[in-house]
Image: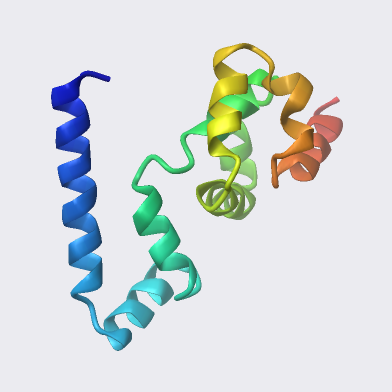
Amino acid sequence: MGLGATIRQWQANWAQAHEFDALDKDQRDALARDIGVSAEMLPVLVARGPDAAAELPRLMEALSLDSEQIRQIHAALMRDMSLTCSGCTAAVRCRDDLAHGQASAHSAEYCPNAETLHELGATRS
């Protein structure tokens, strides 16, 4: 990502954070209800930005899982896994493993969705 794109991304994230900060408690609670998450999870989601769970479909592909097919069959499960991925503290390691083709070998060590992904793989077989 170039400097210009980085600055634009930072500005967009900053604007989103300030929009969120402007909401009062009732508005935050309503937003949380509307999107089906806890009020405590909202700041995490805002801080991580809209691409917070971008690793999940990439990881699923590395594990030979079809994320779109699973989304059609298990929409609620995919939503839960996306939320878990959005709040994950190992995103940097995950991206690095994905970039180096090592995610399938190492994701079980740190991924909070590893058990569910393993079960999805086992039911596919």
